[in-house]
Image (cartoon, rainbow, N blue to C red):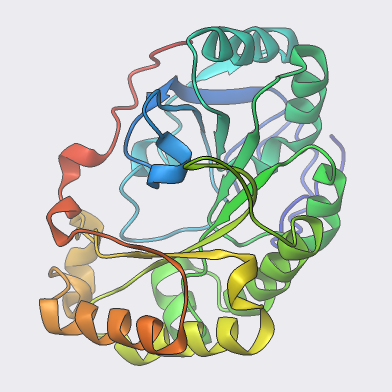
Length: 290
């Protein structure tokens, strides 16, 4: 994988001999492959989402709840054939979909594995949003449901908390590309079969930036063509100790201000129960299913 340019970092590392900014080499590495019941209701349904947590990440979020996976290197290396077999095992468990969490830095290998597995359930791409449009275009026709974050508008905030001052430039373009590929919501009863769900995590002290995210979506996407998932689950990690302004939970007032604005703008989707701001809702990175 000479000169890797899959993500906006464009680190150019030959991943056949070294590791990129994401911490990953040539082989896919994953930390968990199991049913997950805590996604949005239209994803998890009653039988669960067949979720594969891939190791490594192109962001550096200080509040990451999966830090041992994203930056700590936890996971098992898999060949393309082994990954395809993992997808087949999940589908055989009766899951509603295959849910790929942070997959983009393994794009060539995962696409090959999906071609081998030939899943009959929808494929979900679950991503932090910081992606290259050119890489997303390689997934066209494979991804049924895009599930990106849109974390920030402010370069100052994204630089400070995710080591990516260009986050909004890249993520906003990525979201528009995802919408181009899946421009409408397709349902099978209560389950989403095709479409776009945009997640936004409300951060403490960052209400104005959250409102700017909503304003961007209001200006650029038809409201009936995607779902908004507004999240209140922010839980400070030990890495937040050096950022005292976010080393606390989101207040009810902060979350309600953002939720009220989303309702005022007429977005459809989900507003998370504030009781979900608990670490126990984060699945363990215990190599289950691998």
